[in-house]
Amino acid sequence: MKSKTILVTGGAGFIGSHLCKRLLEGGNNVICLDNLFTGSLSNIKNLETNQNFEFVNHDIIKPYYRNNIDEIYNLACPASPVHYKMNPIKTIKTCTIGTINVLGLAKKNNAKILQASTSEVYGDPLIHPQDENYYGNVNITGPRSCYDEGKRCSETLFMDYHREHNLRIKIVRIFNTYGPNMSSNDGRVVSNFIIQALNNRDISIYGNGKQTRSFQYIDDLVQGLLKVMNTEKNFTGPINIGNPTEISVNNLASLILKLTNSSSKIIYQNLPKDDPKKRKPDISKANKLLAWNPKFDLENGLLKTISYFKEVNEIY
Ligand code: NAD
Ligand code: UDP
Image 1 (spheres, protein in one colour):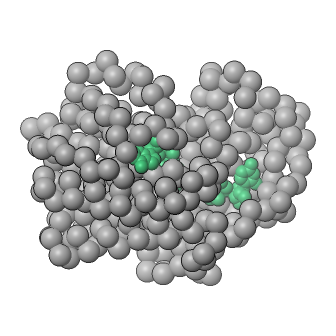
Image 2: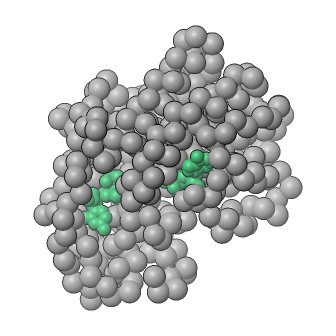
């Protein structure tokens, strides 16, 4: 089979770096485009020796011109609440102007394009678990809105390019994902708790810790992204990709304390505004249409992630 040229925007980030690695292993030429806002060259340092890999330092808010691209994975966007709230206008620009630029590139190349959307499009959901038909419960003007509404607008743009220009698009709604290469300072719950536990520092639970999330290990997500990209032409999504095992933040803290054998104590801090109370994907569509199911349970995935942070743990 002819090798493809695949562009991954946000390729130096957590998910992007794993995806680039898998695409290279599949014999493809990979262009990793990133402005290094939240990503890091250390995530891709092992890939840069591969002659089929190219890193391009570029911000998708500016147009990018290139020919002969077969597929695009659009991952560029700060993903953790701490990072996307840091510069909310830039976050919206990335989700709107940036997405238009990447869609334009796909159109010029007649490339297939996949959007890394998010469970945040469901907001603080009023139905549980969340399936793809749910329109969500999103605050339009709150501090999370730059990301939630930005990502909702990206989905709209994808569908409009599909309807107007017959572009081959795929929309994946990714639920909370964790694993090696997560940035140590992005404030997400799994990385925060592991780093705190490894350093015997207090575990910071926001609110009463009864809020829930459903965490998927990175390898399951990458497998899901590849499967979605390879669906037939008329498959656009949106489709949920996530692990439906739901856990409260309190129980996650206890599990990480046990797995790290840590003596950290738990402290309770303010809950950020609009923090969703519960989240769990309905993955029956992915199961039926892609024969996709997560393979990693939380404990195994956490053990791999703890090993990673032990390796890179220079006392944060
Ligand atoms: P990440 O922050 O590690 O990666 C995002 C990457 O995009 C970074 O390398 C960053 O430098 C780059 N980037 C940001 N703005 C850019 C811009 N304007 N131009 C070029 N590059 C830019 O986050 P991640 O967890 O790897 O998330 C990747 C994608 O998946 C994001 O679009 C995110 O919204 C989506 N997603 C992630 C999760 C999750 O749990 N990790 C859940 C749902 C959706
Ligand atoms: N959280 C927490 N302590 C932390 C970081 C996060 O209790 O140090 C909580 C946060 O309030 C949320 C959940 O953990 O309820 C997941 O947060 P994260 O930022 O990882 O993802 P998201 O809110 O985007 O799902």
